[in-house]
Length: 105
Image 1 (cartoon, rainbow, N blue to C red):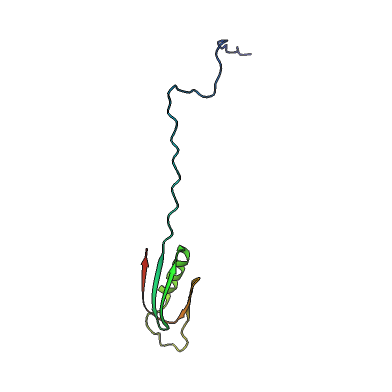
Image 2 (tube, rainbow, N blue to C red):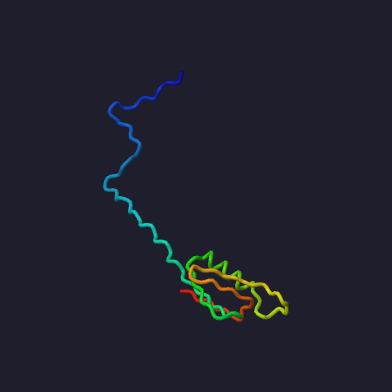
């Protein structure tokens, strides 16, 4: 059997050593979440002018995918595809996009 280590009789065992005059740690505040982006798409289509407003990134990206996939000139087909973008305020349906402008604030 191995011999046991002897400790001094007046010494207490502690788990952490503290220093005298130690400064307390500073607690930093958590950063505020970023403000939502307000984005607008102005569409000039064959059915009129629309202004679509978005605060959600996923909805904006989905609308931009539809805008970019729509043709800018007539295709010559009698049955053209109808595109649809829905927001909480507005639903717009069109066949052709003449132009679009994106505003971010």
